[in-house]
Image (cartoon, rainbow, N blue to C red; front, top):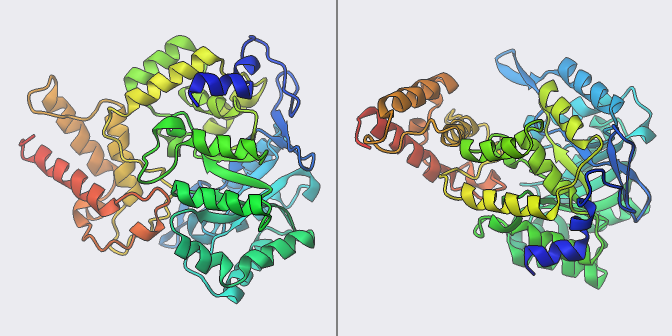
Length: 442
């Protein structure tokens, strides 16, 4: 199904046709207030903007990094005061610190005033009792006796791993029983992986083996039809299959780890010409919110500025019309011309046993490409200026002992990357580029 036909069927064009839009039957908003979506299966009134707790602010303490609890409390207080009521975390986030920080920040609020989502992140655990212990620890860390939305975390790479984590050990039966007992209100899964695995999970739903109350997918205007087929599935397919079954959708990575908030300069210029008073990031959020099956869009707001900007986007929400969706499709195609690394900076690859700052290196490289501070050949205009800017900023971004040349290719990071990036190869490529810059051999 092409984009134009799908938009017509889903009603997106109708949603965004007028300057002042009316909420659909499954959405609610007050003028100048947060946009809400109604979960059709249970009536939950969920803020369209959800708080992703994977990127809480961190500070240095006692030789390591810990969550800045005071800053988290301030962010959560502001979010709650301005209508955000969905908080998504995991025992795997921020080296196991995220759930506790969320639990502390939310403890002052009535439990019924927000929706809590977390995950069974038993990535290297096949033992049933260990997985159950992880589940019960999440309840403890989050100061709750039930989860509103609970997910099997990051499934979809291969059947062997899925069966070991959830089927053969009886954990899927355990969480289904917890749902029956009321300790889990909605059971779902977060998906990164291949089409065959996604189809299998939906077949489980269709056959009655397990009823999925919701699903969390990676969706944005870049991955809508331009996802890397070796690493993920186009979001238009994921959306359509879930929409057919009327399964509510939660969106992760609407900004691709921030890359769609810091797009290449030429793309940013066109966006600002069209919407001078809106941020570049707002385009990505409005894209996701323009699809009616979407229940909530997660954003990992690590500081007040992105929180304020996102609240502006989701207050008196303005979906995209058909022409604007076509514009974003052109921008997505244009982005493919840039040699970016498909990293979302989730930090799952850290800590590196050799001290390499993997996300820092990839972020610096991507931002340099996006902003044009990326010398490609010694013959280009301003080559010397660009070369110096890249090398100076590279050294400032991380200490020399944490740069790409210290990667030994141990491949420890590979099993943790939800995007299936060949991290050692990318680090080697970036290091080779840096060395060629230093030696003027581009």
